[in-house]
Amino acid sequence: MTITENAFMLGLDSNFYLKDDFESPEKRTNVTWFYPKICAFQDALRTEEEKAEYFSFLDRQTHPQQTDILLYFHIPFCEAFCNFCACFKESSAKYQGSQRVRFVKAMVKEIERNARSKYFEGTKIKYVQFGGGTPSALDQDSMSEIIEAVHREFDLSEVDGISLEGSPLGLSADGYIEMLRDLGVTRISFGVQTLNEDLRRKLTIKASVEQVYQTAENIRKAGIKTFALDLMYNLAGQTDEILAADVHGICAELRPSFVQTYRFNQWEGTRLDQQIRAGKVSDVLPSGSIERAQYRQIKESLAAYGYDKQLLINFFTHLDDTGPIGLNHACGGNGYRASYTLGIGPAAENYMGERSYRNHTNVDRWIADVENGIIPIEQGRICSEDEVENRVMVFFPVFGTVRKADVANLEKYRREIDWMVERGYAVETDEDITLTEVGRENAGNIAFLFYSDEEKARARRTMYLSLKNKRNPFHQDEMNIPRTSVFMQSKLAVRTADPAATPTPTPAPTPAPTPQGS
Image (cartoon, rainbow, N blue to C red; front, top):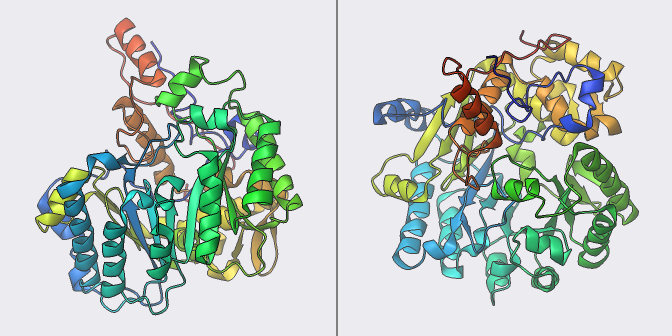
């Protein structure tokens, strides 16, 4: 019996080179935020010997000084879990008392280990970003101890900013925002997602709309330089009218410095996916066509409220002088070898030139390794120079434009560039390549054009292995995966009917034109 993979498993396998498929409502791909990617099943560092060899660079060479460093902290705690979130997290209630003390001490120790290595000695940090999870789920003393260690151990004399993601639940604590301000935090962001109370309840967002408004006001009163709010679209039950009310509330009433927009991802196998499929959320279900329509609605509405400056593919502002954004650095700084990321904390991702690696997606194991002087990494790979070169073009859709002088080997991508220009997705001048409006709408698909052949195959296998092993494809952890996925249910049914059948993926269709590197 022939086994046919479903569309979800082959989500990165569509023939994006054909215009009809490229603009298909059901094939609007996520924007790429990490590249080259790593996979728990393909890149495991299984022995201490493997780890020692992989990380020997920390003590035998110095960091290239021309490259900026983003210092990223993953704080994996949340006061409550939103059922749409695929990020690695743990309940903050689980890590109190002595466990909280151990976590903070481990964070400080990992800061010290990296800062005092030969590789990072004397390195000036360009940007500091706290994400999660919900960093503000940490109490004031714990957060103070971590930020003070950053100031003590790293050179922040040229830092562009310190940013922290939070929640109204933690940020509303007396003195919390002021503490962050006094420790040098210049930017705070938190997720509104929607202001509709019914949708918020179905998404299990614990903070009330009243707390959202009060927290925004407190951030302004504290004198934090900038703050950003997240808005989601294509949510189940989010009609155009609800979305319009969300945009109005955020732009006209809350008035953040930035609005960050995120499309809803209905990850197969999550609790929310199960509820949506069972009809327990809404009669208005997420779809590719609604997603495209609401993306256009958001852009038009934001511009009408003065948020007409699109800094990144999903970042909008009304400010003329915006200052730096951490994701600029996380996405390569829009240039070849322009920016590296040093990640600290459970599940933090790192990129150091040809090295991509990720910390344990298990808090207890991460703490134990740090305490025992072991580098707390579970996956790492050494990427090819070809993939390192590709990074600037993979990330160029995030920025919407790229200077040709910042691309190491421009003619390597000539076939893809010409294809985009001919079909109206981009405009090329002597100096740069810039996406058109339809190109921005398909930014995730365009990024995929510049994946190496190996990365495309790895992405497909990551998806397959994640579903096969009942893991979240995002980090291959167990976040929001309570049941056997629909994909694996169909697999098991096939294998039961035909014991000789195997779960080997069907080969991908050959795209045209042939991508770079083929």
